[in-house]
Image (cartoon, rainbow, N blue to C red):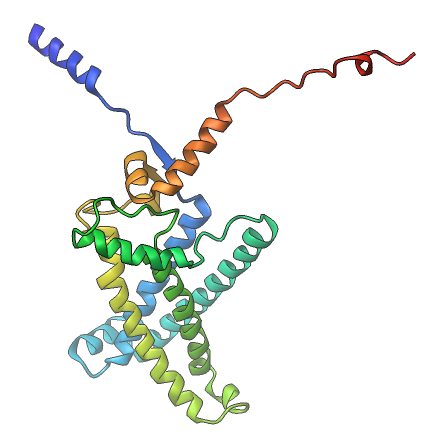
Length: 261
């Protein structure tokens, strides 16, 4: 009994309190969830249509209730995807233009420098790990890939939804080109998510079996300090500044401090 109590005291003394920082707010988490569900639905139904002659494609189309229902599901989620894009750009205008928050996703020359620094560290040519801000070059690359890829998918998808309308303004070859671009971009997006994004959020040894940050909105101090050191030091400075007592302004000295007669 005494040994158990002593062990509990030792554990209590050596227990390390894990501190968390808020990395994603509720709006960002909901937006990511909507994008995730939309992407999965579009990928499954879209690839089933693209490879309808395959066994698995034909099986999926049957499970969805036929080709007409598969197209209806795909187009419904396509509309939701377009609305998500519109909302995202509208919020960017508000966030950057009105609130004047920094554009942390904008690429910079430092990102190019970080690529080479990261390669040097990977091959053992540098002793220290690269320090990143809120987002590293890989996250920025993936973000802008989603932005430009999403715009391509949205535009070509609208052409495929309303081919007669668009052929009144453009040659008929636009529809065939849109079909090719839409299918190939979709395949590229799926491969990117599977090979790149799922590794970074699930399979990477440091976070396996799942990075829960985008769902909880919180990141531990240890991870933030290791993966986004520059942002961590910025947040620490803000935290320390908030704890400082406010300076009391001294009243002016000399004759100017006397009341007027």
